[in-house]
Image 1: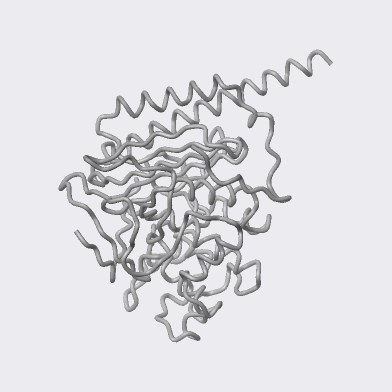
Image 2 (image 1 turned 90 degrees about the vertical axis):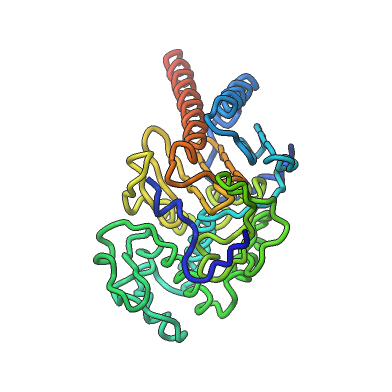
Length: 370
C-alpha cells in the first residue's frame, strides 16, 4: 500500500501512548563515564541471553533488529526477517516515525543557542513574518517542543490554555519545522541533513517525497507492504528514516555532548510535562521522554503502519538500545504491539540497576578498608 501523507500525520503511537559500527563520538562536553562502562564479559553474555529468551518467548513473532551499544561498541544484535525477506542488518533503513522528534528538537535547541529565537518566544510572529498559517497567539516555542501547547488546526479553538496540559501533537512539530525553515531560510531536510553531517552522524536522514532504499515495512494484520511518500506535515515529527547503527550513533552523540551546548542539552532533557503512558511516571522534555525512577532514562517510541520502534538511552552507563521493527501490529492491541519492547526495556533496566548496586557495594567495601 502506498501512503501519501498530506494532511494528517500517521505517527499514532504518541497519541495512543498509553557487528561493527562507526566509532563512538566523543567531545570535551561528554559526561564522565564511570567504571560501570567497563563491564565483565559475563555481564554482557547474561544480558544477551535474557534478550534472546524474551524474544523467543514473546507472544507474537519479532521482525526487525535489536541492537545494544555500550561503551561505544555494539554488544548485542538480534535480527529476523519477515517471511522471505533477508534479516535486517545494522545498516538497514526503516521509517523512524516519532523518533524523528528527537532530531527536530535538537535542531531547534541549536537555533536557540545561535540566537535565532528564544524558547519563551511566541511562535506566531515568526510564522506571520513568513506568511505561514498562525495559531493561538499564546503558544510558545517551548510549549510546542513539550507537547503542552494545545495547538489545534488553523481556524479551530486551542485544545486548552497553552502550558496547562499535555497532548501529543505532530502538528506542533510541523510548526517547529516551519519555524526553522523561516529563520534559516533553508529547506527543513537540508537543515537536518546538514546538522547531522556537521556533527559526524550518519545513518539518519530527512527527505521529502517517495522513500527509497528502505527495508519493506509490513502491516502484520493484512500482510501488506507499506510505501511512504513523505510531505512536510510528517517529516519533522515522524518522517525521517534511519538504521539501527545510525540511530545509536545519534543517541550517543546527543547524550554524549557532541550535538549541543551543555545548557541546550540540559534544557532538552529537563522533565517538562507528565504524560499519560503505560510506563507511568513518565515525563516529556523537548523531543524526548524522561524517566528518573531508579535510574535516569531517556527514550522515544515510533509507530507508522509497517514500522514500530523504541530507543532507550542511559548516558550514565554509556548504554543505548534500539528496537526497529519492520512489521507493525494493531496499535489498539498495546500488549501485542509493544509488550516485547517493554520486556526488553525492563531486562535492560534490571541489569543496569544490578550493575550500579554492585558498583556501589564495591565502592563501600573499598572505603571501609581505608
